[in-house]
Image (cartoon, rainbow, N blue to C red):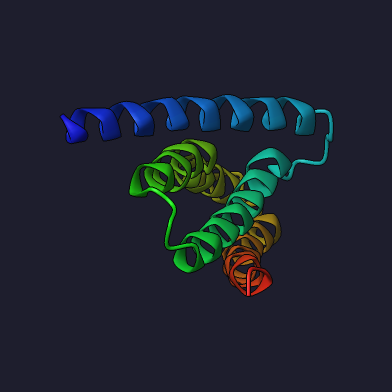
Length: 124
């Protein structure tokens, strides 16, 4: 029964994360520059959020594992968009836009890692 509850919590969190991702992408679509700002912002913000959650849950031993599943696996999993990131990166390559491709991939990875670390350190 616990497994079914956890699956439902992950599903609900994932749905909410996906809705938030969509809304941010709509907002960012107003920026017309050829750079995939929506996905970039969502991925970096998602990395910061999961770093904060990781830090909080690793220090608060009284938090339910189901709560962590809901937020980290569910919400953050539905919110971040690595598959879209990969598709957009390849689209930039196919368009021979090597500079934007390089900035997008390196920026996403470096800032994503930094945001996870910052989020984790901020909870100390």
